[in-house]
Image (cartoon, rainbow, N blue to C red; front, side, top):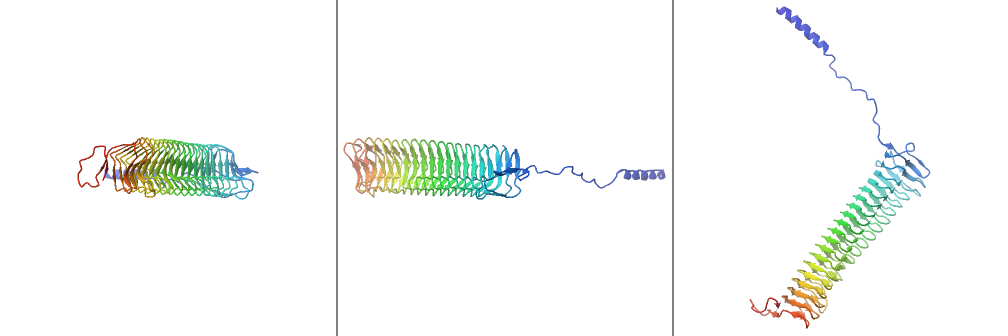
Length: 480
């Protein structure tokens, strides 16, 4: 029985091995079509020019350079005669020359230019006056016109404009510029119409303004340095955050009405550090070494946590303005804080200014402020004002009758203040004022100079009292 089974099994195994076929896998199929570049090269055959331009793009699509482009007299480099065109400069340079025109020009919408340099053209580097122009990683250098001239809705990212004869960047409305730099332009570094957005842009050594923008602008983290006019000249209803203006010939910041500035710095500008219009808000800003005022603001404005030091004057405030937790120090030859009518100052400090520490007109309110070592008066108001719970010390050294606190009009209330080591402690020049609950000590000429006709708490002299005292009322003024 075993003799019959074994041969049958051997025959079955042999048959199975024959039916399995070849062990090597089949070869890959042969490709039926080569990979094709989806873009069109810019060249004489694909984008032929005409007497006014080297190359003309007449259809929408994506194009790229295959090498550098050399300009020719009286001709543009590339003229775009279709909408929605992208040109990749591919890292190459389009170089102009004497009496050339624009490197790239278009009046149609949707032009994008990427990755390269345009330089030495006799007109502009890129003239793109249609809407929605976009440029990324493009340098425009030493052109006689604009570096970039663009229409509404332009977006420019990581672009440079250097040593152009006119504006570095000129854009229309609702433009956005990010990480862009303009240097050495013959006009403005950046010139924008309304509602522009600038982020982390730098404007350096331009002949006119660093940034000139229409109303509604937003600027974040921008720098304007060593420009021939203002660092920032910005329209109304604008917002500036974390911006810096240094060594500009005129104002560091000139900003229109109803604007907001946060954490901005103006240093060593030829005129005002900040010149800001009515109904504006400034917080956390610093003005230093300005040729004129550190801050000049219009009426109904509010300043919080701002500092002005080593300017010609510290703060020049429009009517009905408020300053809170602000400091004016070492301004010369003028005042730390100056305002006309209805000024409110609280928790502010004026120190070592060559003029008055605070000098306000009628209807003003000074509360819990400090004036120290100012050459003229520490705190001065005219009429209808309140000086409350403030400190004045070491003021008046430069004038014969300087006072820690001076009211040189009538209808003022001087209440709960402390005056020490001034020429005169508290001085009421006219009648019709009230002075209560004040204290004075060690003032050089006199502690109190109260003219006739004022309403006063009695003056209690404690300078010779050792220890506790029992005289006086809650309204008394004290010498100690």
